[in-house]
Image (spheres, rainbow, N blue to C red):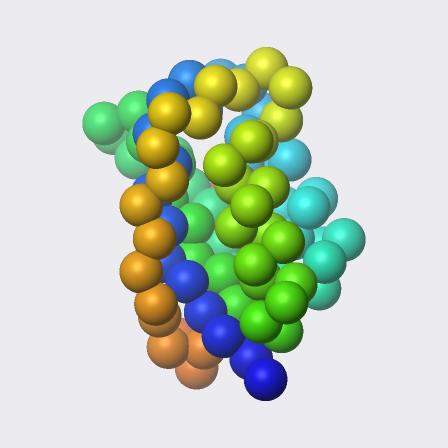
Length: 90
């Protein structure tokens, strides 16, 4: 079954390849959606995919790439129908 999340990631998540690494992890897990930097230094992610893979993806968001420091991940459910195909960096 497909599920979707809308997440906001706080910490040292800009300028550390967070979005590119997020896209790589998403493609590895078969997750679709997008990631973008926000003006307040957070990263916003909209993602959808099979529930088990999406949970693995969310766990990864709590870690991020090696240069990142994730302090907080806010997550809420989203409508899978609102998530585009592929995974884009915005």
